[in-house]
Image (tube, rainbow over all chains, first blue to last red; front, side, top):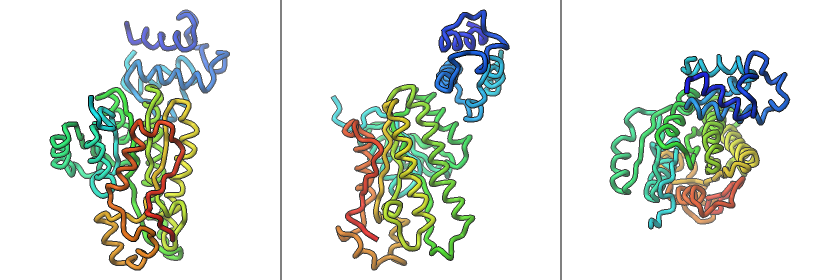
Length: 79
Length: 250
């Protein structure tokens, strides 16, 4: 599985969506069930998938599919 | 089947280079835990850790970092997670102490003390609990003090930090119990560590009358309560501040 596929699989699992909906419109403002609890689940799953641990400010800023990519990239995950 | 209380538990003890922290780390090893023993000075625990590992047939692993260095603390927790996939027990023991009457409080020292005793502790609770949340278990033990409960003349700053430890413990216990993570504090009285005994001889010898039991505590008497809180003997205990003070009053 490629890095992008792994990244997408976390969203697919946490939000129970198809890969086709993942893109620049997939944000905490547009996704109904993206609340603070889901965000923590998303971050936790992302950390487990890539064996990283996000700083608190990055957890707070993990508010969209695209922003998340930039954040995990900071921890050495290369897309 | 092992009868040791902490067999195979993965534990981190901060400030393990001397005194209470050293006693806790060694008691944990004696009870079969895998102990990550933290100190600041590189190499300072190497000989002792090797001896403990051999004596107790377990692994005592020195982990050198300054708990006020957020990045270093995070790297340490990631190392434990990477090596063992879990952390069962965190003992927040590292701390600093000052003895100053109110008019003499040095605010630079006060800020440094809050950084070590409070801010660094919150960060370690945050980091460890993020790992413990995944495994749905864990025990966090925070070192408070009898002066954090009772207050004391001449240690306003220190007692303020130890009072904060109690608040941290109670709030974290409420937030983390849904993940089966227990958080408790220990409030020792006067403990006969090398560091305190020197201060005691110089400043507080008359205070022995304030201790009901009539003597200083041995570090192991604090460590034994830490064993209880880390073990499965205390699975229904959380949010508590356990005084280990020989009936001390100030």
